[in-house]
Image (cartoon, rainbow, N blue to C red; front, side):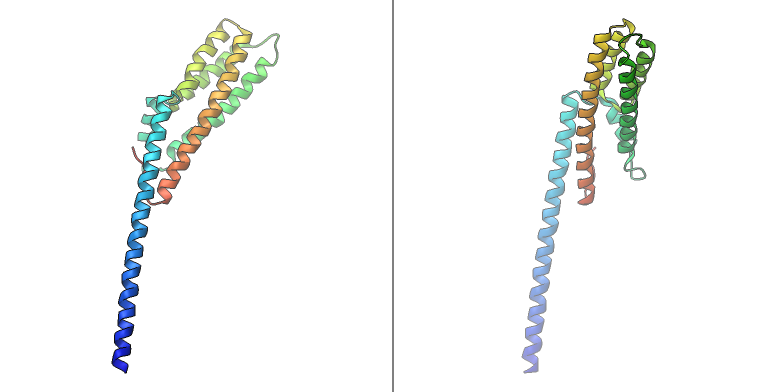
Length: 182
């Protein structure tokens, strides 16, 4: 009969609605769990970068300047820093390739510039190496300069990879609908 068909359809509708609600609730719970896990990973990874000496408090200060209006501020500043690093390292390598008549003043100037930009983004290890590098330039210690240049290159590349991982975690958190932990 028509009445029993309507009751059956109503029952099917109610059941499907309940199933969809339950399914939606499970999806929200799973997403919340994923976001919490990503945020935990982000916090732990950030802390490890400080503990391992890759970053210092200046990076924290830089992050404070980022807001909803400029969500990529830190990534953009850090990207410019890495571009600057590449140019300076390349310039210093060219100058040190001379082996004789090395322009230590030019190398020292580049080291000074690198130290300043490292300091401004909180790149603690790179900044620390620049102190030793500058001393080698001042004393015209060729072997010391070459060794420092190699170490700076290694540290800069290592920091770049680690910060890229950190920024990727940030993107995953945002894409999942979460907020970046402070």
